[in-house]
Length: 233
Image (cartoon, rainbow, N blue to C red; front, top):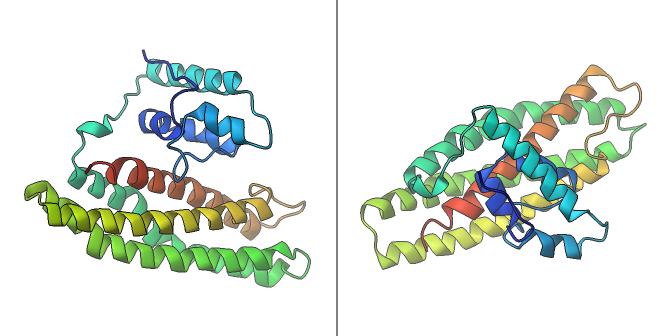
């Protein structure tokens, strides 16, 4: 069985063992937009010290238990771009299409009801709706312009198609970096979605769904930046 090292990148670790993202999230380590550097290099730059040996040891221990429980890795290198596009559509785009509007109603509700006593909810309201607007436009561009090019390139590769894909990938990565910053700000002002004392049920539902949104979106960005976009070199 493989053993992860501090010389591995977070992106490659999560590519093999998706649950490793939980460890990186806890330590505020980017595994999607900035996850293509060796883990040790990322740790060396962090202001708050993180014990790298303990972190990689915990990931390896969790990974071993995951394998022993009968789970299997997905070899993304064997997955075609079209299959990966289908996976992203099913597990991430569909989720966002279904989740963003109802979650908007919850974010608005707790801001309207609790905003006078919890001023950070105004910032949360603004950040979430900026995130919503950005992701809705972003998905339109991917579904309309980018994803069909990957599928076409798989059947009839050409230099022109390749260059068009590279140019669109660059724009999509810039979008990912921006929405990643929005998610980070939402996480910070809510103290990692920690509920205030006496939070009502709507508050609890909102924070739980925002935390799920964050997790899904980071995985979404990781699959595109580190696997799909690199499938055509």
